[in-house]
Length: 295
Picture 1: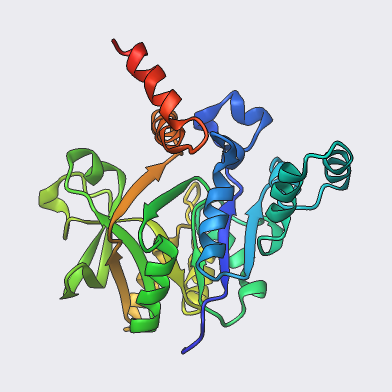
Picture 2 (picture 1 turned 120 degrees about the vertical axis):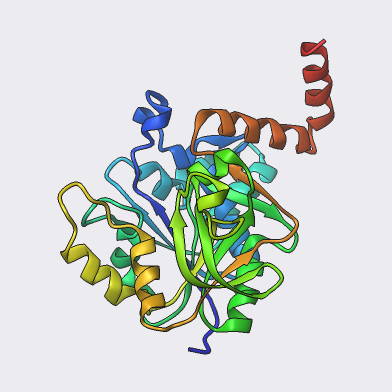
């Protein structure tokens, strides 16, 4: 299985119901963080880490994602004719970031369906699996840390953060298993939303970024055939199947990391403010505005 990670998968087929009515007109992944769509920041992290092919699994209402990463001849012609060379370069770079493959989601609802939808593109290669509406600021980047962990362990990797809060135990899955070194757990299970510290196997939450290996496909295919009515196909079904087969799976704490979840309104607003304050063009002015506002 000693293969380099050159591909990544981003699921982006959800309806974004928590942001209605905005998401009736715009996919949540395309909502702006100052001047970039959320999903572009995810893509840029992947490309910077060396990913060459990015597969985005979309739905019928996500055409704008495909358009964003495609060439726009009319826009480029307009920018060129008006002498806006900086903007023209910026627009062209988006479509040149990587090779993009778009797939329409088919199959049962759930966050694992995109993995099966992309099987024919990923083949027998490992790949990064990132959500389209959350990301982590870290140094080295989340993508680079996950790829380094895969290089070391040659196994499926789950990215995590230590979150020891009452809210965290109600929102996230927590890694359980043998601690093999500081911040690394060889998994025996992931407990989904344990509810309290007492019910959690550790304080390492599994929440953002994965290295997926081909071992998962069989288990997801079996799970998809045995879903009960109303049950979703989730990635943990496949991961637990791999673990049960005796194949090592590791949860790795992401270091020097700040988690940004833009999947709900409050955290989205917090992230917009964070990136507004860091913006090189007007960050200082924005900070002054907020300080005046809060007096």
